[in-house]
Image (cartoon, rainbow, N blue to C red; front, side, top):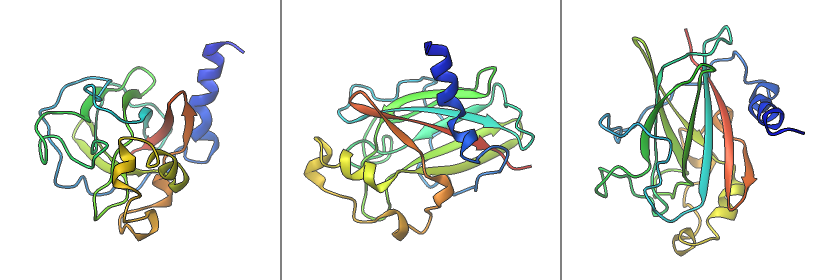
Length: 193
Protein backbone atom coordinates (compact mmCIF):
# COMPACT_ATOMS: atom_id res chain seq x y z
CA UNK A 1 0.00 0.00 0.00
CA UNK A 2 1.36 3.41 -0.90
CA UNK A 3 2.30 5.93 1.80
CA UNK A 4 -0.43 8.39 0.74
CA UNK A 5 -3.11 5.67 1.00
CA UNK A 6 -1.82 4.68 4.45
CA UNK A 7 -1.84 8.30 5.57
CA UNK A 8 -5.42 8.65 4.34
CA UNK A 9 -6.47 5.61 6.36
CA UNK A 10 -4.64 6.92 9.43
CA UNK A 11 -6.32 10.31 9.17
CA UNK A 12 -9.74 8.70 8.75
CA UNK A 13 -9.46 6.69 11.98
CA UNK A 14 -11.12 9.27 14.26
CA UNK A 15 -13.94 9.66 11.74
CA UNK A 16 -14.55 5.92 11.84
CA UNK A 17 -14.68 6.04 15.63
CA UNK A 18 -17.76 8.24 15.62
CA UNK A 19 -16.15 11.60 16.40
CA UNK A 20 -17.20 13.13 13.08
CA UNK A 21 -19.47 16.16 13.27
CA UNK A 22 -20.13 15.84 16.99
CA UNK A 23 -18.82 18.79 18.97
CA UNK A 24 -16.21 17.99 21.53
CA UNK A 25 -16.53 19.39 25.04
CA UNK A 26 -14.90 22.67 25.91
CA UNK A 27 -12.63 22.57 28.95
CA UNK A 28 -10.82 25.33 30.76
CA UNK A 29 -7.68 26.50 29.02
CA UNK A 30 -6.13 26.71 32.49
CA UNK A 31 -3.92 29.43 33.95
CA UNK A 32 -0.80 28.66 31.88
CA UNK A 33 -1.74 29.81 28.37
CA UNK A 34 0.85 32.14 26.79
CA UNK A 35 0.00 33.84 23.51
CA UNK A 36 3.50 34.97 22.54
CA UNK A 37 4.88 31.60 21.43
CA UNK A 38 6.57 30.49 18.20
CA UNK A 39 4.65 29.23 15.20
CA UNK A 40 6.25 25.82 14.68
CA UNK A 41 5.64 22.11 14.32
CA UNK A 42 8.44 20.81 16.57
CA UNK A 43 7.93 21.86 20.20
CA UNK A 44 10.67 19.72 21.77
CA UNK A 45 13.60 22.17 21.83
CA UNK A 46 16.02 19.27 22.32
CA UNK A 47 14.46 18.12 25.60
CA UNK A 48 14.52 14.43 26.54
CA UNK A 49 11.31 12.44 26.44
CA UNK A 50 9.19 10.08 24.40
CA UNK A 51 8.29 11.62 21.01
CA UNK A 52 4.61 12.35 20.37
CA UNK A 53 3.45 13.15 16.84
CA UNK A 54 0.04 14.80 16.88
CA UNK A 55 -2.26 15.57 13.95
CA UNK A 56 -5.33 17.67 14.67
CA UNK A 57 -8.15 18.20 12.22
CA UNK A 58 -10.38 21.21 12.95
CA UNK A 59 -13.84 21.25 11.43
CA UNK A 60 -17.30 22.71 11.92
CA UNK A 61 -20.44 20.75 12.80
CA UNK A 62 -21.17 20.27 9.09
CA UNK A 63 -17.84 18.36 8.84
CA UNK A 64 -16.21 21.10 6.76
CA UNK A 65 -12.52 21.74 7.44
CA UNK A 66 -11.69 25.07 9.03
CA UNK A 67 -8.79 26.52 7.06
CA UNK A 68 -6.23 29.00 8.40
CA UNK A 69 -7.35 28.90 12.02
CA UNK A 70 -4.79 29.19 14.81
CA UNK A 71 -4.29 26.05 16.92
CA UNK A 72 -2.20 26.45 20.09
CA UNK A 73 -0.78 23.41 21.89
CA UNK A 74 0.96 23.48 25.25
CA UNK A 75 1.78 21.00 28.00
CA UNK A 76 4.42 20.11 30.56
CA UNK A 77 7.84 18.67 29.80
CA UNK A 78 8.81 15.16 30.93
CA UNK A 79 9.39 16.46 34.47
CA UNK A 80 5.95 18.06 34.80
CA UNK A 81 7.08 21.69 34.28
CA UNK A 82 5.38 24.32 32.13
CA UNK A 83 7.71 26.61 30.18
CA UNK A 84 7.25 30.28 30.97
CA UNK A 85 5.69 29.31 34.32
CA UNK A 86 7.90 26.91 36.35
CA UNK A 87 10.83 27.06 33.92
CA UNK A 88 12.13 29.64 31.43
CA UNK A 89 11.63 29.31 27.70
CA UNK A 90 8.91 28.16 25.33
CA UNK A 91 9.49 24.40 25.24
CA UNK A 92 6.38 22.28 24.69
CA UNK A 93 4.49 25.32 23.39
CA UNK A 94 3.64 26.51 19.93
CA UNK A 95 0.94 27.16 17.41
CA UNK A 96 0.15 26.24 13.83
CA UNK A 97 -2.37 27.43 11.27
CA UNK A 98 -4.57 24.75 9.76
CA UNK A 99 -3.93 23.79 6.14
CA UNK A 100 -6.41 23.38 3.27
CA UNK A 101 -7.75 20.21 4.90
CA UNK A 102 -8.17 21.85 8.31
CA UNK A 103 -5.16 20.02 9.74
CA UNK A 104 -2.35 21.12 12.02
CA UNK A 105 0.56 18.82 12.89
CA UNK A 106 2.86 18.94 15.90
CA UNK A 107 5.89 16.96 17.04
CA UNK A 108 6.34 17.16 20.77
CA UNK A 109 7.02 15.02 23.86
CA UNK A 110 4.72 12.89 25.94
CA UNK A 111 4.03 15.19 28.89
CA UNK A 112 5.08 14.56 32.45
CA UNK A 113 2.63 14.85 35.30
CA UNK A 114 2.16 17.15 38.25
CA UNK A 115 0.43 16.29 41.54
CA UNK A 116 -3.10 17.61 40.98
CA UNK A 117 -3.78 16.39 37.41
CA UNK A 118 -3.65 13.38 35.15
CA UNK A 119 -1.30 13.87 32.15
CA UNK A 120 -2.94 16.04 29.49
CA UNK A 121 -2.48 18.41 26.56
CA UNK A 122 -4.00 21.90 26.33
CA UNK A 123 -5.51 23.09 23.05
CA UNK A 124 -6.86 26.48 22.06
CA UNK A 125 -8.40 27.18 18.65
CA UNK A 126 -9.08 30.66 17.27
CA UNK A 127 -11.49 30.56 14.33
CA UNK A 128 -12.32 34.16 13.53
CA UNK A 129 -14.08 35.61 16.58
CA UNK A 130 -14.65 32.14 18.05
CA UNK A 131 -12.15 30.94 20.66
CA UNK A 132 -12.41 27.35 21.83
CA UNK A 133 -10.30 25.63 24.50
CA UNK A 134 -10.16 21.99 25.52
CA UNK A 135 -7.75 19.33 26.77
CA UNK A 136 -6.79 15.87 25.54
CA UNK A 137 -5.99 12.92 27.79
CA UNK A 138 -3.95 9.73 27.43
CA UNK A 139 -4.87 6.05 27.83
CA UNK A 140 -3.52 4.81 31.15
CA UNK A 141 -1.90 1.75 29.54
CA UNK A 142 0.21 4.14 27.42
CA UNK A 143 1.03 6.20 30.51
CA UNK A 144 2.35 3.05 32.21
CA UNK A 145 4.61 2.31 29.22
CA UNK A 146 5.96 5.86 29.01
CA UNK A 147 6.50 6.44 32.73
CA UNK A 148 8.61 3.26 32.96
CA UNK A 149 11.18 4.93 30.66
CA UNK A 150 13.78 7.63 31.34
CA UNK A 151 13.51 10.51 32.07
CA UNK A 152 9.97 9.86 33.36
CA UNK A 153 10.81 6.78 35.43
CA UNK A 154 12.54 8.77 38.21
CA UNK A 155 9.17 10.36 39.10
CA UNK A 156 7.12 7.17 38.86
CA UNK A 157 3.46 6.96 37.92
CA UNK A 158 1.10 9.95 38.14
CA UNK A 159 -0.62 10.44 41.49
CA UNK A 160 -3.91 11.25 39.78
CA UNK A 161 -5.42 8.77 37.32
CA UNK A 162 -7.79 9.72 34.54
CA UNK A 163 -10.94 8.91 36.52
CA UNK A 164 -9.71 10.88 39.56
CA UNK A 165 -9.14 14.05 37.52
CA UNK A 166 -12.27 16.21 37.71
CA UNK A 167 -11.71 17.50 34.16
CA UNK A 168 -11.21 14.11 32.49
CA UNK A 169 -13.70 13.21 29.76
CA UNK A 170 -13.58 9.86 27.99
CA UNK A 171 -14.52 11.55 24.70
CA UNK A 172 -11.30 13.58 24.96
CA UNK A 173 -9.08 10.50 25.21
CA UNK A 174 -6.41 10.68 22.50
CA UNK A 175 -6.09 7.38 20.62
CA UNK A 176 -2.40 6.57 20.25
CA UNK A 177 -0.38 4.18 18.13
CA UNK A 178 3.25 3.22 18.59
CA UNK A 179 5.58 4.96 16.11
CA UNK A 180 9.28 4.09 16.41
CA UNK A 181 10.43 5.12 19.88
CA UNK A 182 7.31 7.22 20.44
CA UNK A 183 3.63 7.52 19.67
CA UNK A 184 1.36 9.22 17.19
CA UNK A 185 -2.20 10.35 17.59
CA UNK A 186 -4.88 11.98 15.50
CA UNK A 187 -7.89 13.82 16.86
CA UNK A 188 -10.79 15.61 15.20
CA UNK A 189 -11.77 18.87 16.88
CA UNK A 190 -15.35 19.66 15.90
CA UNK A 191 -16.08 23.16 17.10
CA UNK A 192 -19.53 23.97 18.49
CA UNK A 193 -21.82 26.50 16.86
